[in-house]
Amino acid sequence: MDGRFPNHHPDPTVSDNMRDLVRAVTESGAELGIAFDGDADRIGVVDARGRIVWGDELLVIFGRDVLARNPGATIVSEVKCSQRLYDDLSRHGGHAIMWKAGHSLLKAKMRETGALLGGEMSGHIFFKERYFGYDDAIYAGARLLEIVARTGKTVDQLLADLPPAHTLPGCAQVQGGGACPRPFPGGGMRSDRRGRRARALPAGLGAAARFEHATRPGDALRGRDPRAARGIPAHRRAGGRGRPEGARRVTRDGRPRKRRRRLAPSGG
Image (cartoon, rainbow, N blue to C red):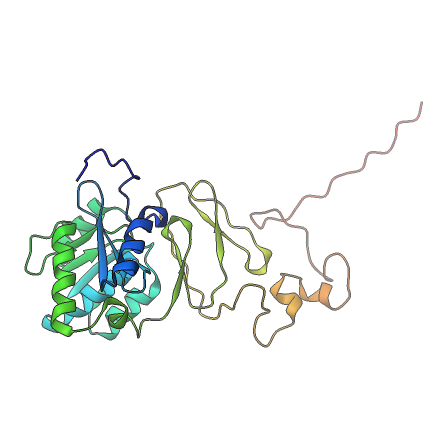
């Protein structure tokens, strides 16, 4: 291995960096491919179809395996992982904790809670069960190969019952048919749902939002006036103009807005 990494930056979470591995897996008919970052503490995986397997999907595979031997075990992950991870771990009898992004923060939370497994979307995977609790991607790769060999299933078969999710820049995920947010340059998100714009978040901070009844982008909310989905108030949809009757002018923080006095022109 050339430690200067002449082909591309060794980051397995960037799709462009995985192209060579995807091509090698599909051309050779391999069951899976494994990639590491520069210091081998982050793992990236490609399944037999050439699809990149993201960090929360790997945690689903590892979590099910750990919970089969340790019912009720605590597993820690972070806000960039999709809700389907936490739902799946709970269905399999685990205690799933969503925590702050950052591998040092996750390891501290694992020590605090006695968690047997932890991981991030970035590919840091921490095994406390049968290991030392730190992020060793080579060991994570060996554990994945062990699961595949023992079950006789490929990676895509192990994940066949997991709901789909759509991965966006910055590792954020939208599960199922939810409204798709768009990334701010600073690292935060904004949503087009109802035309409302969210404030940008500084890069490196995490936030999670769960929409119980979100619909596909561009769809009206089920059972409601399509104009309601665009944020048009009820009195405007009824044909009215301006503010509804009895409404008061208020400031952004909800305080009544003061009336401006009109000064009569001075004579002279």
